[in-house]
Length: 364
Image (cartoon, rainbow, N blue to C red; front, top):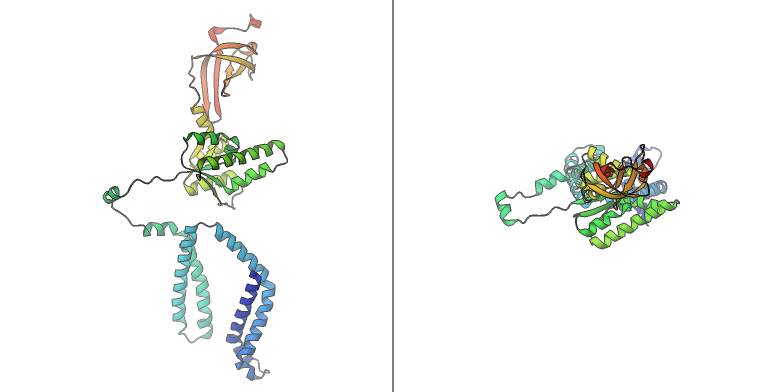
């Protein structure tokens, strides 16, 4: 259908061009009979035929271009399109005024071609200026109210906070439990490129990856049902960037939001780029019971450690306890005294030793 419309437009344009320009061409060809030069129907037919032949060559390319433009426009935010259109209209108005002034010049080429060129150039520049300067235009058009008056007539407006979820924190699943407690406010944002990565993982031929990907999709479904509209999926793609983590940081900067992750490396990169980041592991560590040096604990030694004579135990929450001289107590429940605690975004590690300097029975 679109191809037919383009061909009809080519016919109309060709007929118009034929009526305007072909009489001059006929007059320049000496061996043609001049009666044709004033025949508008013949000129229109010739122009329409020529442009119809051109449409056969270029119609498919024009259709593809229009489809591409349609996709880009549908993805663009509404304010961007609004201010871009305003700039386009202003550019065309300026082009019309200048073209009207040039039409008084008695030079056929200038009077005919200049308005077309001006409309294209100034229309494009107007759209770009309106698109790029939209924030400044909004600031200029927004009425300024005195601070005293604003305090009297306006109620405090709570700004929406956006929290952009990365793939790892969705697959991890704890974000759903945290959300259910109500401690994390604002709108959860899942960019389309994160959703695409999740779908790619869920479609993987590797069983473990496929399970993790499907778990992530289930977690998103749970969040959608529990938060009732507080989940937003954005179409922002950032095609010039290939890495998903960099796209996520770009999106967070553009929206003024925070990245939610449990990826230690992404946490560090966000800090380097001054992007606010919430690490689920930091939250988990913060709510774990406080352990201080000198405190006694009752643990079961599970395995030996990396260093000589070390034993390793675990708390119920998964915290690792490295026990000095604990290798000989593997498989036993013993009392230990905490010597130090190491806390990082990757987790917490407790160092301890057997209480009262107790030695393994195998050593004495």
